[in-house]
Image 1 (cartoon, rainbow, N blue to C red):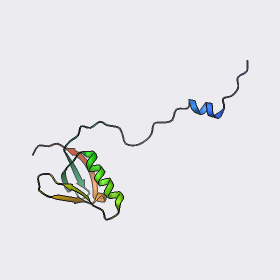
Image 2: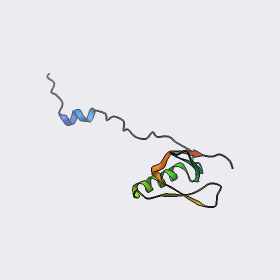
Image 3: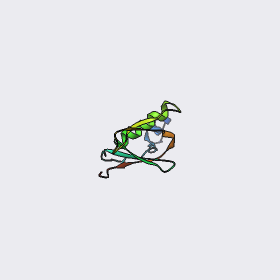
Image 4: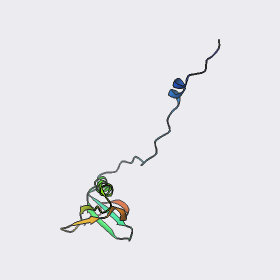
Length: 97
């Protein structure tokens, strides 16, 4: 009995694709506030989950060079506009008032 070499299609179906590279999948409980740290060291705590704040920053960054992301700042009655190009870090904040 002779064996035939597998065709390309059959051989390819046995090869497993490498895991996709990208952001790690981590489950994070929703937190009502997020801290935005700018490159100059200023830190702003804004209302919203990490996903909401990240989306706001990403949307503003894609919309144009002069576009700002608007958020409700924690412990104030006003809003704050952040230039997404100046954001250095973003993290959850659940510290009590």
